[in-house]
Image 1: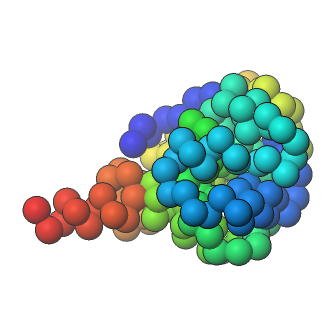
Image 2 (image 1 turned 60 degrees about the vertical axis):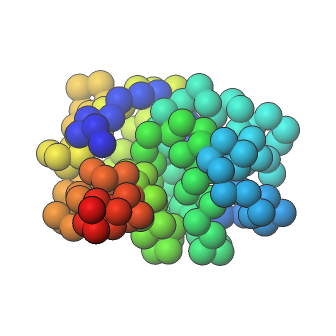
Length: 163
């Protein structure tokens, strides 16, 4: 996992739920590419494809609320999104993201200062986001979560432990 993630952001509002991220009828798939084909489909045909032009999602409060489906995180990863920054996350989505190796950061101070297509840099080691000349601090990950992200998620971490 890269310690610093840079990219252009797409900005969502509050309460983006797991049904919006990936509709229940697509839960028959587990492949990131297949899920990405249908990601955010509820927001309009081709909306997910539009997100492929961005590397980071920024959202308001309660991102990932709704069901506990792990495919929501996998669909986001399938789009090529490197990280999600939000004012807050639904707890299950947060845990699913870490377990799947998707960096996810709570930083409510950033939200009102960015617009779609702005570029930001997230330094996971320092617990800092840079946007232009501004810096925003977020709580650093505990060592256990850092290890999961470094291995690309819980499954890869466990595989490495038994080898």
